[in-house]
Length: 124
Image (cartoon, rainbow, N blue to C red; front, side):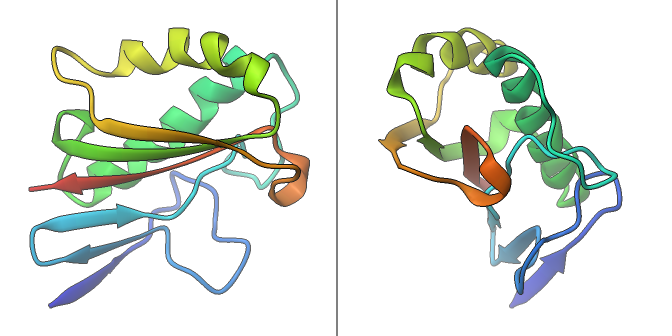
């Protein structure tokens, strides 16, 4: 069983994909960049951009009936690895005792000129 998750509380997909898919007990989010709900890329510090990405993921996860405590895996793409420590300072505040498994991948370019993109897998 698969269910499409879409919410107007997060930016609309900018391509042929869903914000998230629920498959059995797993929720797979699409990659989120620091885009606001009106479709504008947030121009700010990497910390502000990370908060925006996390807000986007939070509302998508909530729409699927879960929250950050249900996240088991995160994938993060960054255009500048030197931003990692500042991203981590924000990221860690969204989790309690157990951090999900994660990889961070340096890439040369991201959609819309973003510096950060993140996706998550959660389980109900």
